[in-house]
Length: 156
Image (cartoon, rainbow, N blue to C red; front, side, top):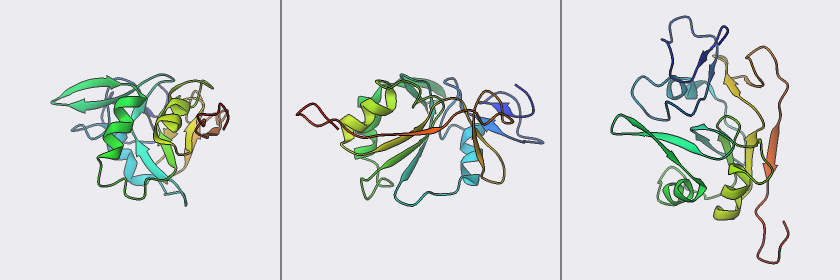
């Protein structure tokens, strides 16, 4: 796990980087991703959704337990979330959610009818707000991928 802390494992003392894992999530008490979220700099035109993820699912803390959910459930939560006011494009601050072309990010874009930007690999958040996409916080080998919703006519 290198110099960073992966997911909810370990304390934040001496924190250098945090990456999401599908085990501990979101607004959970003591969750490192929730603590690291304050470092993230907003990107114009996108609403940040900070949540632990994989290429196929995301997870939230509910009553002290991690609960996996698919894109349908997250889209429903977002539609009813007062923080998601303008209902525009989303930047998923969520590991590997952009890894598969027909995976979580594309499915969420389709369900919400908005563009979704997601990382292709593990996403590390450094204290200064820099984000690194790759296997460690020192190897920025991944990229952000923007998924557009498919229309009913079969295209983007």
